[in-house]
Length: 265
Ligand code: C2E
Ligand code: MG
Ligand code: MG
Image (cartoon, rainbow, N blue to C red; front, side, top):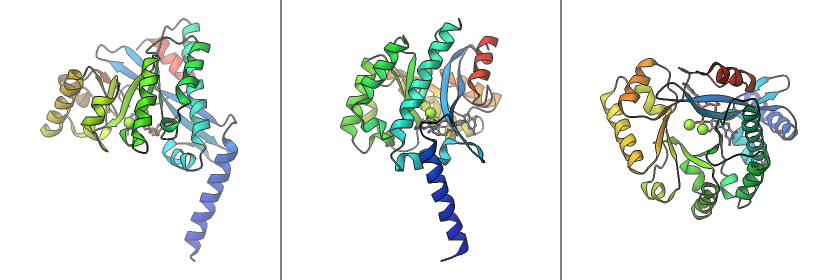
């Protein structure tokens, strides 16, 4: 026993207790980060969850999503995220801001839940969301626990008009055999490649290669974590389709995202 270990355990117990209590309350919010086209227009937003933990403040997803998954809370939380995104798409449409696609991040438990597609289709009907407007991002490692089921779920989602992205592409498995079987619209090039692209010729070549591969497979590429003009320019030269990162905007509240849309960046 050590006092440090004791306090780590205590913190973890508190986190677990607070997280369990938070699900189903209004302590969660979605923040939205824009994805930009080559011409500078807004292609859509990625929804990123935040937890407003009482007494602590806004907690980033990396600090509670893995625990929520372990505790079996993510199926419920993930449904809330999808519903919230559908409501936002409808709200922007009703505010006269047009059809603005929103991407939500999936979790492993959702990709092993055969009930997911019907749940999503019900929400799309309820909020009158047309094909291609709701997007879902997944990583290849999420599919590993039951690849056949995951692939079947993804085909159903895509068949029902949900656009699909492979998140953090280039890290993890990047298995070409899966890529061939997946009905995916977008590859999201991981931030780690984007970071050095302007200064490392090898990374730039690699990015250009990934763009060429994606385009051959009829997929578009979104660069993640674009922070500088140099990165942006180099990626443009590599034929990248969409750009996301702090250079354009940090993730922002629904209200700020609405202003961003109104300003028509
Ligand atoms: P992700 O899906 O790859 O999301 C991109 C992350 O990169 C976000 O972190 C975003 O804030 C950050 N980012 C965007 N642009 C830049 C940039 O230019 N520079 C840097 N350094 N970072 C940038 P965030 O919001 O903390 O989310 C982390 C991860 O948490 C996400 O990675 C995603 O895997 C997960 N996540 C977020 N929301 C949800 C959710 O609703 N459900 C699930 N299951 N996972 C979520
Ligand atoms: Mg993502
Ligand atoms: Mg990512």
